[in-house]
Amino acid sequence: MKQLFASLSFRLALTYAGLFVGSLLLLVGAYYTMVVRVPLRQAEQVVQREAAQLANIYIVDGEAALVTRLRARDAAVDRYKAFHAFVDRKGRVVTANLPSWPRAVFQGWGRIEADTSVDGDEHDFEALALDRRFDDGARLIIGRDVDNISEREQALASGASVVAVVALLLALLGGLLMSRAIGRRVDRVAATARDVMAGDMSKRVSIDGSGDEFDRLAETLNAMLQRIEHSMEAVRRVSDSVAHEMRTPLARLRASLEDAAAGQGDVADALAEADRLTTIFDAVLRIARLDTGSREIALGEVDLTALLDDVADFYRPAAEERGILLTSFIQSGLFLRCDRDLVFQAAANLLDNAIKYSPNGGEVVLYGQEETAALLIAVQDTGPGVPDSDLPHIAERFYRAHKGAAPGVGLGLSLVETVARLHHSALAFRNIDGGFRVDWRFPA
Image (cartoon, helix red, strand yellow):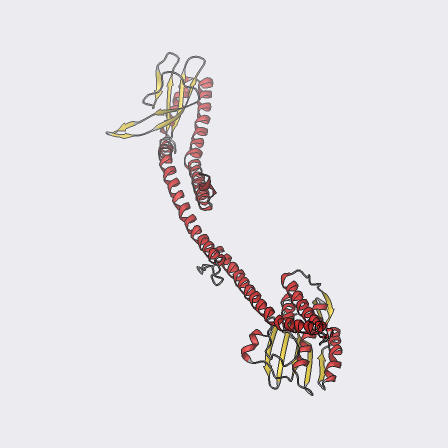
């Protein structure tokens, strides 16, 4: 039983049934008030008022005046048919249109059957009556017909139990159908989760296309699974790349140490390989910290014009050393809310790559300008470009489109891509006539 109540579907069915039956009871109560209680209260007010007036007529004006008034009341047309019975102090019935009444005086409200026969047809009446005994022993019963109200009251009373049972069954059925529909959607999510836990990262939660809450949840879960799949694939690629990239430096380091131990080599070679390994691990660690959020980005208002000028000035000597013309077209007055250090490092990586892959005597151009809805940083070079098949992968860690063409380990653009994503900006790589171009756009 405890397990049954722990079921969300069962609790939803009970909740739905309770709400359904409760709503129905409220409707029945409102209907009873409108068609029974309010009309009955109106009839009571009429009878109370008339009983007080007629009693006062008897006390003040006497029996004859009361009889005259009762007969006039009987002849008048009213929504509630008038009934009365007057018995004098000697017990004689002076006037009455009630076929019968209780022998003893009743206290409070009474219901008296007042059926009559006219030309062989029976007419059903029920008088809602007040009984009054005067000090001299006379008795006056005053009432109005409430047969229609009584019929509605009896119909509601007799049908209430049936309606309650039917309503409860319908509510339980509706609740079960509703909980079953919800349960099926939840089961689909659970089945997908089990498949993913079993190792099938390609599984996704099915979407009905209704656009309801479950579809929105499925879309969110699918986006999460997509991100996890990509992350795991990236981890796998990074692991493979690290293993591949580390093999050569470690082999060189071992060889250098063996030569040094044998007195045939220089320890400086081993130190150079160790420095190379340290650089690789530092770069991987920095990207990982940015990816996982371990390194908080410090957003602030940054003079982008000055930042790009500093990057260009920093790399101009390296460009001049190889005879590369480094020019910059940077619009004045550019400001950007960003992490200055990260954007500087990313822009420096782009410029460093462009200089590395440009031939001696080539040209590198750094752009910084404001567009309609964005701020653009662009780096263009006269290098060999990148094969179109490699363009989707060049920002992956350790990926190098031209292995051996220039020094490096394939982490520069990975850092740029991570910084761009943290700033909700977009990177675009494309080959152009006579070179290669990177566009980095920040939303204005």
